[in-house]
View 1 (cartoon, rainbow over the protein chains, first blue to last red):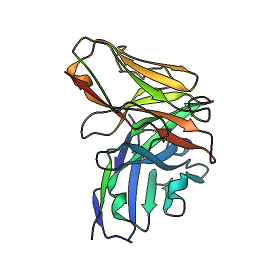
View 2: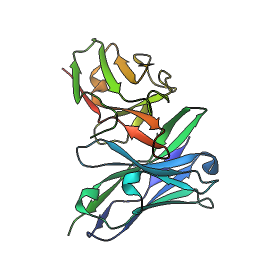
View 3: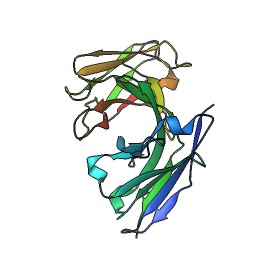
View 4: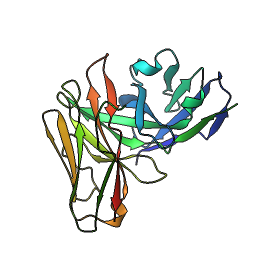
Length: 121
Length: 111
């Protein structure tokens, strides 16, 4: 059974950075893309970017270009999302999700439990 | 403002059939398959429908999906109280080097 376990809640000051981890178990980590999706309080889901561990190249949403860095550590089957220059609007629950599929049919089949990041002075 | 458009709310009584729409464009729904996610209060999203109309193992056949052109729909028949949740559609968008887009979500209330 695949599991994605994320790091705990964080409280950060405006202007600082946060790094959230997502440890995978029960599957072949390197072969599947991992995406990061965030959800602000009372709002919908927003894709931030994704990475395929075996290739190591990340693809970011235009909105977060230059502020987000997604990396992986294949030795520990862990993905990381670092967001810099934090502002209050970045307060949200951040999810990692495994992306699977084939041809033109892709989807997120497993999700982490979410990590609440609160940005407050 | 979400790229995919969903009604903010929907409702029905137990046993009824409800549908939730999702409207997009040629670069997302028009070119790629649609997925639906269910998010119960305080929990992570869960895959409900993938590839327009496929159900993952364990999802009841009360849930069904369809797609036509640049729109998609999620139908829930035999509505149950435990179906009360937020529902999101999602699709890959081929513009801007490719990225995932979501609908704004539909809050389903079981009356």
